[in-house]
Image (cartoon, rainbow, N blue to C red):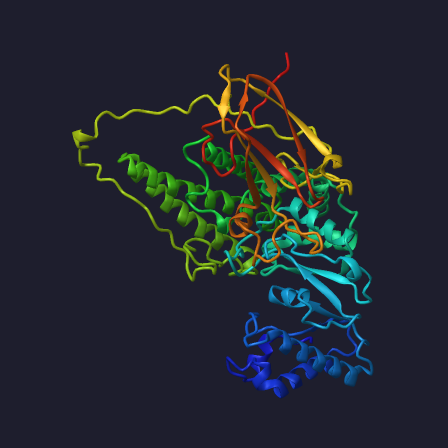
Length: 557
């Protein structure tokens, strides 16, 4: 109703008084003041009510309370504006309010816009269907580019995949949720690039094509910094977009990336280092006038991310080396502390720019979440291990050796570089596969894609064969056509998938013999909102990693 919850407290109302049942008259007057002061302005009035500090409303029947709130709010609008539909209004179907609406416990007037929401992590939960598409008030979307809440807040710096954002906003627009889009950006400064991208699509949904994200980057960079710098800045942004897509900063732990298999951790560190070299070269070439903006938009996010990832991986390496009682564990521990200081120094450098114009904008703690969802009060790292280097190893441990990773050519895992049915879901990684609407005539007539793969092993693999499919993180959009059990409180595995930025599904095939030679894997998808990104075929011995095995290639003779 054009009021902030902070205003309620600022007017002298103590905590615990934002309660419709106990303080209906006072809250009604609070709403009335919002309706009256918005006269003459182009405004959307938000309808309904949630609990204190934007939490679930308490009480035996929260839906009944919301119904009473809606009736009162409509009456206020009619008194102030002459008609109860005189000004634009919306009801945010957020969290429990969506459940109340879908269960039929809320009577929402036809002229009120239904504001659908994502899952707080950029995956839309629900979109209009059936009669909702023809409502007078239409539908809109509430979409998060940052969030405070379960399973873990992400507020530090940009960790959004523009490919994922493009796909979800395209789905919303094509399914009729286009009356109003609301973006949650938190501290706006670190999110200038993704917000510009989202607002460009809001202005013109066709402004960015499926393969047009590189052009968006180059156009934005050239407008701001000129064509000479624009192409390199666009390349840096694209590289950043690719790497943050793997996992949000706050969701990365020392154990996330494997130190032991497929050179995963080292490869990711190397990619960040290469990107940092590019960003540093851009900054070094910039004019004095350009340097503050390039530091904030290009160098800082890349350097901060490189430091963060290196610290987490080095913390894991320190713990591994310490378990092995290696002297180098102590050297790695010191490197972790150096990176910890470098992280803080970089934030201080940002805060000092332009005479402290953006002082404290990056003071958000981002280390030491532990098992809580909310940001810690202060950065902290734990788990550093030290070895007593002056002490000789006990002879009982026996001989020590060095293990070399085995040949992985017998672990084929094909991807879909040659498919035209792709979405820009992962930047420079293999584009995600999606297929057209499914046929009404059953699974056998749906669109499919065939993947050829070659088994190199001379000895046939007999027994259990597993197929691991990795999908970009999406959810069911249409409650009339669910692909999961709608009675579950959330999709099974959501807490893990939302942090992994992907759904991983393992299919154990019927016991069979897979001989050396060429084979064909046929994939059919059930919905346009499914985006297949990676396929791995486990013939036995697949190692546990975050990203899975490296792709294997076979050159035809």
